[in-house]
Structure formats: structure tokens, C-alpha cells
Length: 195
Ligand code: ADP
Ligand code: MG
Image 1 (cartoon, rainbow, N blue to C red):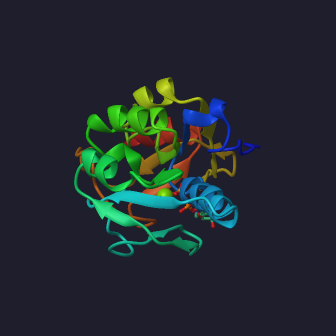
Image 2 (cartoon, rainbow, N blue to C red):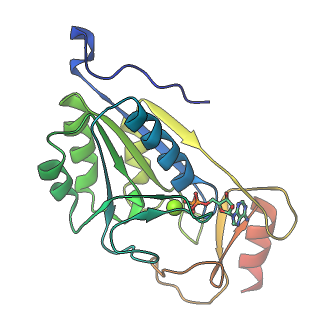
């Protein structure tokens, strides 16, 4: 289990750090992001949560998990908007980070170097089982990477893949249980072969 370090305070902590929480759809990424942000709030740290405007499935500004946990957030168009708006924060949370432009990597580094704890949550793989957008580079520059898992909807094994039930070949097709299923490696690749 990830354990929070002290942010702010001593000389040593003038620099922050980057955390990545990743996994398939329904794996609990947003839940884990909300959990970490709420603990920081309890400790009276200044927090802000951002998400890309592309993801407005549930609510225009709030971040909402699949089991209805909810936290206030700001929707932004570009990664650089986060840099401008988070100047006053101790802890910066970013959900659905895979939808941001490549600039998000520099933004995360700059925020961490400015003394902030940066928590990025997002899909590690797209519907083809390949790295999603900037996530692999974010994982490389992060101090802490946590992979969370769902339950395979076909067999109950550990699920790491987001299986798209439709035939669309676009990387971004927003949707929920009607379009995507969490699947284990075996059930994912067997399903891909049947398409
Ligand atoms: P993510 O952000 O990774 O898509 P959330 O944090 O929003 O996931 O939601 C996690 C919740 O999704 C779980 O606590 C559970 O209630 C629900 N859920 C739905 N389908 C599954 C599944 N196949 N495996 C595990 N949890 C699932
Ligand atoms: Mg989520």
C-alpha cells in the first residue's frame, strides 16, 4: 500500500514528487485518486483536482468513480492550464491523464520540481492493449507507480485490459459498461481474435 510522505516543511521537501495510479477500466483508479486526495485534505494540504474536458461522462466538473464516490475538480482543455491554475497547491490530482496532450509530462515534472505532490490517474492501455497516450512516459518519470486491477467479467480472474465490445477502431470512444468490459489477458486476447 502506498504511504504518504510529508509535503512542505523541511528543506529536504522543497521538491515534490510524481505518483501514477494506472490500470484498466473499472480497476479503481479514480477511487484510489479520491482516497489519496481526501487524506491530503484531512491533513489540511491545499489540493486541486483536474481532468480533461474530453471526459464529461458523469459531471462537467466533478470527478466521480464507478461506485459513486465524488470529489470536486476542474475540467481543463490543455495540460498547460494545470500549470497556471495549480500554483497555490500542495497536492495536484489529475484524473483520466491518458487524454491529455504530451505536454502533460513536462507539466508534471515542473509541478513536482516546484514542491508539489502530483498524483496522475489514468488508463495504462487502450482497447488494443497498447500504451495509452502519455502514460508510459509519465510512469517512467514518476517516483511511485501503482497498478490497480479489476475483476475479469468473463472468468473472474485478475483483469488488466479494457475490452471494447464494439468494432470501432478509434482510440477514444467514450463509454461505460455498455461498450467496455474489464478482462484478463486470456479473455481479452480471445475476444480480440473473435472480432
Ligand atoms: P476506474 O477509475 O479505474 O475506471 P473507478 O474507481 O471509477 O474505476 O471504479 C471502481 C469501481 O468499479 C469498483 O469499486 C466497483 O464498484 C466497480 N466495478 C465495475 N465493474 C467492475 C469490475 N469488472 N471489476 C472491479 N470493479 C468493478
Ligand atoms: Mg476513472
